[in-house]
Image (cartoon, rainbow, N blue to C red):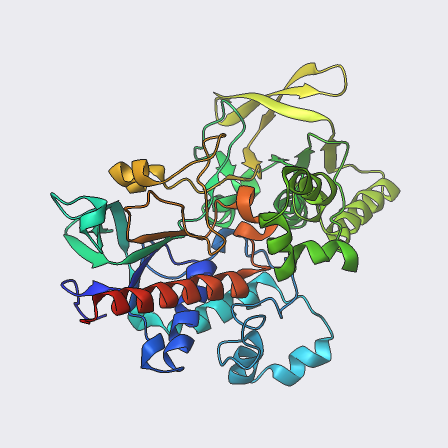
Length: 440
């Protein structure tokens, strides 16, 4: 991309996964609505190229949401950036329709995302890590309409400073490991699974374990069972077996755009009810098809009088240490918390993620960001952090707003609408700022 480091941008996005990709498209489409809607944006991504959960693009894994919940359709059904447009451009639209499936494979959806980002690539700087967001040197919030971003090349060879009126932070979730467990060449998190697996010699993997009760854990257990016919595969599950995801029509309404308003403007009791009744739509649950696939495999083994897939229910990992070439895992098993030690060649922890936390990135700016009684950021309906009154610049979050906006805050389900609302907020605020600076 061209060197425009001395330009002041209307918005800079930090991180470039599906969320900020959807925002980049919303801004691109906004420009088509007239010069007053034109917003100049730039996006930084520390990865060398676009990638979204690349290490979980397992051959049989499908999306858990409809293809219509793509980057744009719920906001603009006629968009040229839709999944349907991608299929048409790829020459696969008739075949996809004939497949009669609302849920494409993750590999195909990832190809769609790559196709979409290629059309806004001039606004993305890959291999660039934002180190900090700050006010210009020697200024107070009420004295500045802009923020400065310190950006480093991934190579570590160069740094630059970029000026912007707004930032949108979308740095993604942070992998979470069982307490006391550290990643190494034999202990993996699901976020690195395929890359790690491809660097091993499968013939040497004879005892493998997968920790977790969610979709990723079940999919990895199925993958390892199929790929390693000589191996024993252990599923370490804190619950009593996998729980099925509720994707029935009424439950799915929790992901509708209108549900965000119901949550945001609801009472504490309303919000608590959202989580109590609807966690099973997304958290620590598995698609019915995957559960049945695994059960069919265990039953087929039983018919043949073999056992390769072992389920350790009500079991938690409490410790991990190396024992020669193997990994010795300490487990608390069953209702009596019996302690057992088992040796594995590989331990895969599909144990989820922690929410995005931008405090370190914001540095001194964080003291101008207001928090609630629980120490969480207060966030406006348009996903902008509530800041001290003197703060003129906007700091938006794509993720980390589950406490204010509900279950869809970091999910694809409401992606198109969420990005559209952020784009519209930036456009509106920019127009207001221009009016204030116009001479009377």
